Amino acid sequence: MTTDEISKNKDQEQYEIDTLTNDRLIKDHEYDGIKELDNDLPPWWKWLFYISIAFGIIYLVRLWVFQSEDLYQVQEYQKDMEEAASIVTKPAADFEIKVLDDPASLANGKDTYDKICQVCHLIDGGGLVGPNFTDNYWIHGNTMEDMYQIVTDGVIEKGMIPYKDQLSPTQRLEVLSYIIKDLHGTTPANPKAPQGEELEWPY
Image 1 (cartoon, helix red, strand yellow):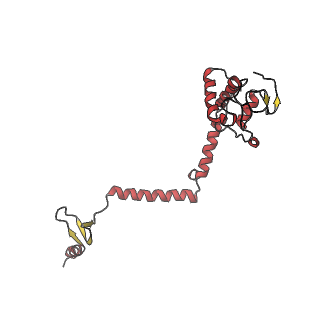
Image 2: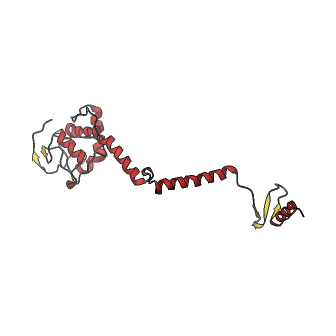
């Protein structure tokens, strides 16, 4: 008996041929009328599998042997935060801390105030957890520079967080300009008692 005949006999013992499709069907691999095929995997699937294995090996070598920092999420997060902070907090060289009085800036400032500041200072500036913006008493000074510094760095012991990472320098100017131009000197519904030192209003 030749080698081909032996191989053919083994195939006949293990497989049967589908008379319709000529596919090889594994014998005794049938369930609920469904027979298991023994088709070869398509080449594209094999190559994709090989590539994924190669990628995994390269990734692990870079991660554990060379310890590439760009693969560690903590370092990547810190790097992204540093880049974002430098963009938000670094003013332009000609940036000037001053009161803005154009309608667009005041409208933007009101929008920021309504979203962030009114929670602690009330919508009319009368003060709640935070101090009253409408009177002439100030805890940390009433110049634009004083107020800009407070918004930038916060007052942690008083519960005010820094906004240097949340508001751009221009946004800080806009919200302070809104407080100075539109809220100070008004009469809130339920003003908070004066806090700090009474200072001459510079604006």
